[in-house]
Image (tube, rainbow, N blue to C red; front, top):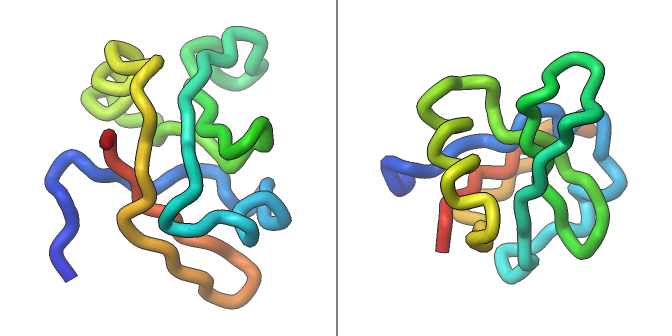
Length: 93
């Protein structure tokens, strides 16, 4: 399967399994800065209906692109469940 070149996997989904299990290809996803994050003050959280799914990967180019487009919605381009973990690939609409 070929994905859009600007797509990326959401990081940290294992910490939000219950929320990730409710995501569909039609789920509206949004970004928000999380400056109070004790591990990364530049963290960008990915939300679905007010529930956290995970984070933008800590890759400078991906994080910079997402920071510039913080108000733009994301769409799901691939969902995968392996065991109890979820792989959710997204890109900008």
